[in-house]
Each structure stands twice: as C-alpha cells, then as structure tokens.
Image (cartoon, rainbow, N blue to C red; front, side, top):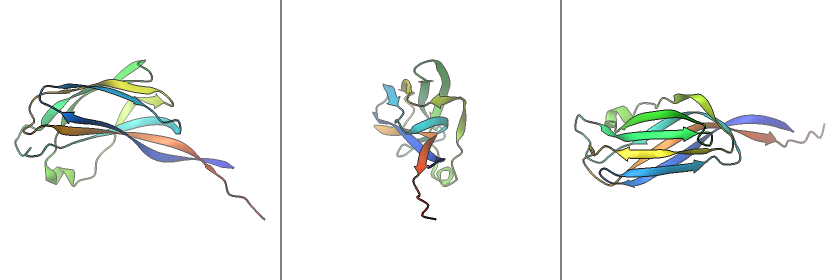
Length: 136
C-alpha cells in the first residue's frame, strides 16, 4: 500500500449575515485532513455594483488558538472579476491536522442587501492509501 497526498478543500460557511452583526466561527478539521496551507474567500452580495466592495472583517485563530495568522478585510467582487481564476492566499503557519479554526466575522455595514453569505475555503491536503493488489 502506498500513501498519496491529494488536495482537498475545507469549507467554512458564514451565513445569514445582517448589518453590523458579528458571527462566531468554530470549525474542526476533518480527521482525514493532513494539513492546510492556504485559503480563499468568496463573498458576493446582491446589488453590489457600487464602488465600495468592503463587506466585513474576519479574524481567525488556528491550531487550537495557538496562533492568529489571519486578520483580513473581505470584499465583494464585481462579476467580471469573479470570472477570473481565484488565487489561493498562503498562510505563514500551516493548520495542523485535527485542530480547530476559530474566530469571528464582523459585518462592516457597507453591503447593500442583507442577509448575505461568506465562504472561506481552506486549501488542504489529505493522505489517501493506494490499495492496488499486484497479482504479478
């Protein structure tokens, strides 16, 4: 049996965000995740064709609150920008297997319609076992 690394995306969904609200984030990495080394945000609010795309601020603690690598302003992107490929943002410290990602998302009350959703995709790897039997 051989072990192979495979890319897997973890999803943290923050939904029903209202104007000025603060949402708690608690996410435990699934047991099959080996580590996470980056992330992508996805957030788009209906009617957000204005020039101000800022939606809110996310602050995350990783590795069971041992470090806080992420304080980030989340923006809603115009549709023509969304058609481009997303770029994964790298974490300075990898998220360890079996640990918690915790923190909060704060709405900065600049969205034009409520409620809305934000998705945080974690760029992770998982070990898979190759169970091929050689009948040679």
